[in-house]
Length: 241
Image (cartoon, rainbow, N blue to C red; front, side):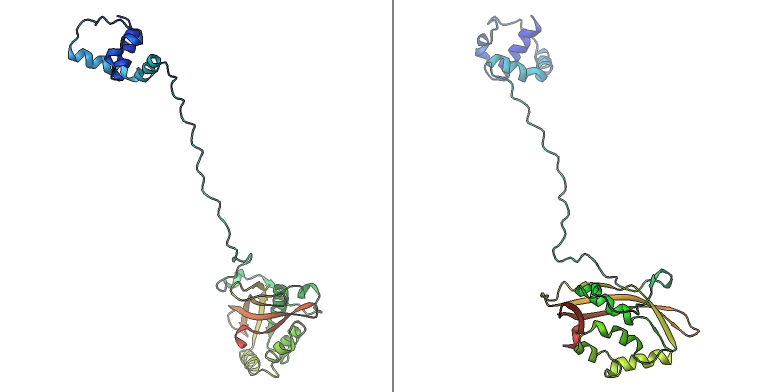
């Protein structure tokens, strides 16, 4: 008995069609009787090729293997539409890590008033640093050209009790300070139009009392910034109504 005969017979038997052995091209003469153990062994041996033999008996082609699944990749992270390009630090750094920027003293340029963020940064950079030996209002006057008149009235130490009180504390402590370059962004929660925005502006200030230890503090302001006569100007504080 040939191996081919065994394979084709096994395929027909697996199909549950022992009467169709002749249709598979096999002799209907039964082979010699085998023991049950031999029959089981034969089935085990021919099982791996039974599917191929079954296809040969039926004349149907073997089914093609399914195409491989495409690789699964994680979706690319998307940025939120409300997230600003620049973020603000949550607190002051150490004294040694503050990069000090020179305080500007010259005329304000058109570029420095070309956007709400630029105007707010220019404004803070002109008054953040101070020296207790200078006259009252020196630093505030540097920031005056960047402000609306309404904003100036609440900022000028000659008309604002809060500003005058802050300067008195500086003089009493004989304090001098330098600052980092300001960072500003338009508040993502506040309303904005073509003529107005709320801007958050911060800088790190190194404040040193005379003969004392330097201390880093974060200066943070939220201001209305308005577009007036072709330029952006800093107006009142956001909580000033």
